[in-house]
Length: 70
Image 1 (cartoon, rainbow, N blue to C red):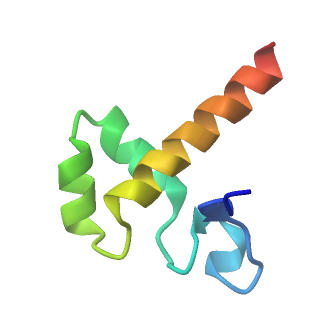
Image 2 (cartoon, helix red, strand yellow):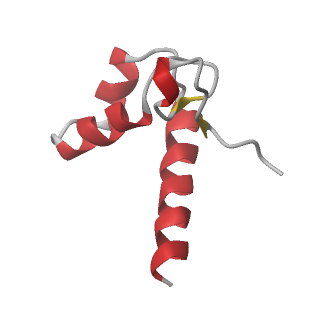
């Protein structure tokens, strides 16, 4: 089982969902993509997040959404 890449820890950023082992909120990635920026631009601004982490987070979000609407 793969560990979730987005975690909630009340000790980190007041419990805002963040990328594991970082202080980078997952919402930042969504905001970048919504704003028309590329994944590469996001990764440049937040080097603590790897490309693999970002892709896994998006896949987890997709799976969660599909499970909710199915």
